[in-house]
Structures are given as C-alpha cells and as structure tokens.
Image 1: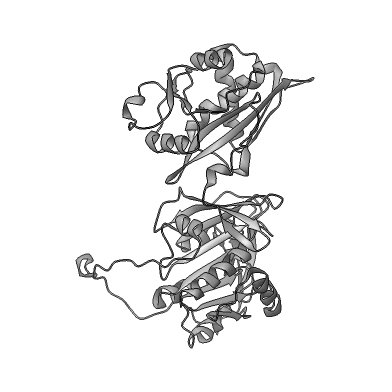
Image 2: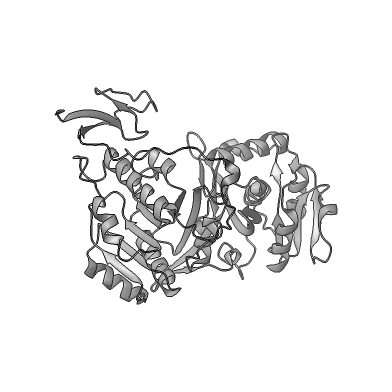
Length: 451
C-alpha cells in the first residue's frame, strides 16, 4: 500500500512539483506554490475505454437554449442557457451574485423547471429570508446545504433538476483529497466531478467564484479553462448600476455587456441603457462630451467628462476612471504634438459616467473634445455627439457599425454628429441629424472654438 505523500501546486496556473520552488516554472509567479497532500486512493478518472467516431455520424440537433428569465443575463450568455453547460460567475463580495442567482432560480422554476440551490456559505433559514425579500416563492426551487461534492449526485438523483447553483465553488470539497476546501487541488477536483456529471446528465451548473483583491477569480486559472462560460459581475457597491461582462463563452460572443440596477427588491434589468449614462436636462458645461460606444450588439451613448487644471509642483497628474490611463496619456500626447496645447504643465482628470469601462476606440474623439473644452473653458452644445478614432498623426479614422450608432443617436434626440470624413455616404437616409465630417484633430479644435 502506497504512503500518503505531498506535492506543491501553483495557485495561479496549477503547475505541480515534487518540491517547493520560490518561482513557478509554469507562470513565473513568485511564492505561488502551495503544499497539497496526495491521497494514493484509486483515481476517479478511470473509466471505460471509449473510441473515436466520425464527425458526420453525430446527429444534427437544434440547440434549444433555456431562458434565465433575465434578458440581460441571456444577452451575455449568447441567447440563453445551454443545457449541460458550466457557468462561472465571479464578482466582489456583496456585489449581488447570490441575489442574481436566486432570482434566476425563481424565474426558471416559474417556467416549470426544477432548480437546486446548494449553499455552502448561508444556512437554509438565511436563504429563506433572502427569498422572501426578493419575492421568490416558486415551488420548483429546492435548497441544499451540502458541502461534500461526492454526495451531490445522490442528492440530485430523485429531483433530476435542470439547473444547479453552487454558492460557492470555494466552499465545497471532495473526500478523495485531504486538503481544505478552496485549495488548488480541491477546486480542480470538485470542478472536474461537476463537469463530468453536467455533461453526462445535461444539467446546467452555475458556479459562484470568489475574486482576489486584484479583481481576478481566485484559484488556479485552470478553473476558467474547464468551464464553458466565465462571467464577471462588476460594479461599485455604493452605486446601483451593475454590469455583467462575459470573459469566456463557448456558445456565444464575449463582447456583450448586461446592465442591471440594484433595488430594494433585487436586481432589475436596464432596458434602455443610454439613459443611464447621460445627464439629461443639465445646462452645457465645459469639459463634457457625448460619444457612442458599441458594446456587443448594441450602441450606448456615453458622457465623458474631463477636467484640465494647472499643475502644482512636480509632475502633472493623469487620472482616468472608465478608460485605460495609458489611453488618456496617448490622447494628451496627440493634442500636445498636433495642436500645440501645453498639457504637460496641466493636470488632466477624465471620468466616464455610469461606471462603464470603455474599450471601443470610437470614443477617442469625444475624449479629445472634452479635454479641449475644459482647457479652453468652452462648453459644447448639448445636442452634439462625437464619433471617431484618433491616429498618432492626428487623423480621424472611421469606425464600424456607424449606421446603428446614428440610429441610436437620432432616437435619443441628439441633432448634430461630428464624425470622420468619407463615412456619410454609407449612412441610410431618413435620419434627422446634421452630420459634420472632419479629417484631422485641428478641425475638431476649430469646431469647439467657434462653438
């Protein structure tokens, strides 16, 4: 009989070593190897031998997705829940992960399906209090307080649920490994057992994952590779707006963003997101510009605010909220080089309203317009929208999906659009918009100055 031994596993990438190393050879991370106890029992991966089959022999069946009852979550999932999939939901503590999934459980049970909510962090009485607050009273929702994942299949055999929610994956364990719940070996083994059960029975699993202080999912990165969908639940606990952002999706696009609002009765879908990111009814003020950012399959109108102030002793400050700070520095350098603005001796602060983080390069023109407006203390007309990407030479480059952006701008009541040259001919007629084409950033400065 083999003796129980130990091994060292990297908490970042899952690399295994027979001895401790200061730096992981797999991901080059320092002090990430953690000691794990190896149980020489029979491996759970030993199964009957399978043989390859021809691709053409697989039946062509239409994939029937199941709605979660939340249109924003369905959007991020690619159109709904795929049976037999593993969905990993991560987010900061208190952001609303358990609230969202309990509401989803009620929505699915309302459609006639059975849902099991396994909680390793809350008791059944605590979950019942939460369900009363959220108004979840459906008959098809069952609660399970079981942390040993080895007993999961026996617990679910009689109910045969369509969806199982595990809150959270860091609290469950398997008795085949002697390490504590949440360790690298436990996370990997528990997820592997859940994956095998999900694919065999076509049961959908929602796994709640903790995040580190850097905002990444806690545990080995192999956890994200094993699941089918990875979703981050983002937002500030002091702000009602919440964002669902897909990071990985084997059944759809990862560009989609879902928007929800936290209320006293739980999470509510934001059906018209453009109103969330704008400040209607306010007088025009310097340093504020509106742009159209394309997130997934829909355009969003975003307000960008900039503040340019005289710098004190030392280096000028650059602070950005909602975009990459390096991107702000790049736009400032273009304004200095191409337009002669002495921003090197000015502090520049930039903020995107609503808490959304923008990656779409089409908002470059609005950022530059907000900075110029604040520097010159010249307000921009409230009915004007800026669309365009800036090149390092100061040229305004075209952007994709222009027609969809302009339709959203027209629907929101804006009347003037500053956009790159030679793109108007691609726009469908019938829009009540004044389209102003510009070629360089100098033309942008002239428009704001004449303003």
